[in-house]
Image (cartoon, rainbow over all chains, first blue to last red; front, side):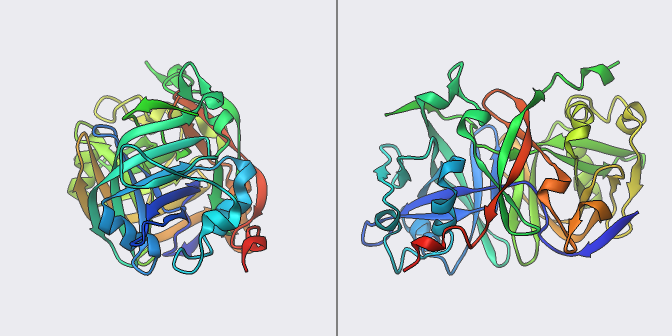
Length: 189
Length: 189
């Protein structure tokens, strides 16, 4: 017997992604989001949702570009801070000591120290309600050499953070469980 | 120095969510997706992306509703199977022995054995390319009593699966790391 919890955002897991953008003054900014995900394979696209009130919202609207930097678990404090402070008030890179690296393919910076980066040009915006969804076409992916296995980023090397909506808590990602399109084959006729 | 990997869907983590829908024959169907995420707080919404070729695509278009059932790690094999077989050819509930439970609030079934369920009415569709994005307004959330902490679902009780895009592998979610809007406070002025 399940309990009814009402109309609430209690989906999980959600990612902890850092959206990189430039301000009007060309200053690099980084903002943490958990409302996002992949939304298309061809063209390869990710979606991130932002409130209109955020500094990043205006930045992405103006430059038509953003990056998604995926922090490993060792950067949990920095990721949490990027979600609390506003780029209107402070230079979050300066405060944390992390490095804004200009993308060479889209008009946005990324976080150099984070192991996996998606460089996106803005493809669609969708007004939903409190949040506006930005669909970005992934123009290139950059990754640190040491998170690659057979030339592709491995989740248990990237060690991305998870956000649990229920209690507003961060969790680590866990160990390998099984191969996709494989472990369920026993059910195939 | 980062390596360039090209324009590929290498975002992570992505969720492993089961989309529940009814076929034209009223038969309940379940399909696994990893392209999805939360996209708005008010109204509370999740987005899931589906290829036009899938059985679920037509189902959701007709009924304007779907559910998202979140499997715990013990159901990894079933989740993998739900992503391989098509409801056009088989009754995936019958094959796996899992139970389709009719939602009382939207016109779609969910997986009774999975600990967390979002019941959604279709709010928007967005054609992106190979995938169409379905934005569903969360009308109600249902959860098993034993995954609740202070009345809210806890990620380390639900134990959702993660999908690693790089190697097409499943991972477990990991342990608690820290509180959101808290562990980064040391950087606030």
